[in-house]
Image 1 (cartoon, rainbow, N blue to C red):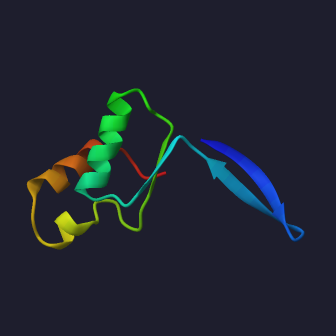
Image 2: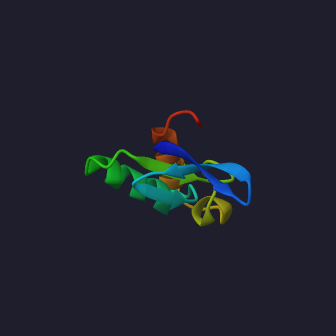
Length: 76
């Protein structure tokens, strides 16, 4: 991920650039991140409100959700 700065109307803001941005951290999002990593795409950012959230977890289903969450490291 690359961090740059942009100025808009005299205000300087940080601007981040990455290969792939994944929104959410449900089973589908984490599965997507794992597949991208397996294809040697490592410049990935996951933006989420809650690690392990998502429809699968919120609807009370799915061991897959908990398994995928367990594969990921600490939040950064």
